[in-house]
Amino acid sequence: MLRLRLPLVLLTTFVAVLALAGCSSSERLTPPGSLARELDLTGQTLTVGGKEFAEQLVLCKMTIALLQSTGATVVDRCDTKGSSNVRAALSSGQIDMYWEYTGTAWRTYLSQESTIADPRVLYDAVRFADAGNQITWLDPTPFNNTYAVGVRSDVAQRLRVRTISDFAALVRAGSPAATLCVDQEFTGREDGLQGLLATYDITLGDRALHTRQIEQIYGAVASQNPCTFGEVFATDGRLNPLRISTLVDDRGYFLPYNAALTVRSDVMARAPRLALLGRMVAPTLTEQVMRGLNERVSAGGRSPDEVARSFLREQGLIG
Image (cartoon, rainbow, N blue to C red; front, side):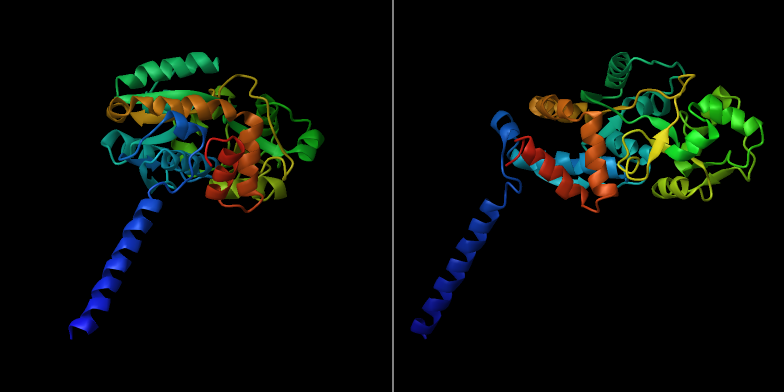
C-alpha cells in the first residue's frame, strides 16, 4: 500500500508547486514598461471605474493595464452607465479612480454657473475645488472632448450652416431640416440641452427634438433620419468615417472638457507616486491621438482593451 500511495503524494505535491508557480507568474498580468521603472505598486489592490462610451472604455482599460504593469491587483469597474453614477462610486469609495472631464465636474458636480473658456484655468479651478471633496485630479490631457452639434459636412454646406447661431436661424425659419438628436443624459445635465437652447434662443417642438442613445446619434445624423443635427463629442472616432463636421460654438456655451484621472485623496495619500501615471500618460493623449484611438473602437471594431494596450506598448509605457 505504501508504494501505491507514495507516487500519489508526490503527484499532489508536484501539482501544488505548479499551481504556486502559476500564481507567481500571473501576478503582473501586464508586462512592465517605462512606468513600472518609476512606479511599484506591488501588493496594492485598486478599483478602476469608467463610463460606458468608447473613449471612456479606452481610458479605463489603459489605466488597468498601466496599474497591472506596476504590480498592482486591479478590479475592473469600466462600463458604468451615467456620469453621476461613476462619480458617486468614487465619492463613496466603491472605486478608487476614473477619468473625468473638467467641464463636467465644473457644471455638474461643483454646480458652478460661470463659464471659464481657458482649459488650464478651468482645470486649476476644478482641481482646487474638488480637493475639498477629497478628490485629487492628476495631470490633464491636451485633448478636449467638448460637446458639439454635428451635421454631415455636405449637408452643412448645402444649408449654409457653419455655426450654432446658423442652426438657430434655421429653426426660427421653420426649416424641416432643423431637427436635433440628443441623448437622455444631455437633456438633464447642467451643461446640456436646456442651457444650449437658452444661450442660442432656440425653441424646438416635439417633432424637431429626438432622444436617442448616444451610440445611435452618429448614424442618425449621417442618414439624416430622424434628425439632421445631433449632439456629438469632439474627439469621437465616428466623425471622420461618417464625414460629420461640428458647428462652431460662436457664443461659447460649451466649456472645455479636458480629461484627467481623478483619484480619491486617501488613495493618493497611500500611494502618492500614482501622480506619475497622469504625468507620463496624459501628455501623450492629444486630440488627434484620442480621436484615432476612438476610431479604432467605434469604426474599426477593435476592443477597447486591445486598442488601449496597443497604444501603451507603442509608447513604451507597458511591455
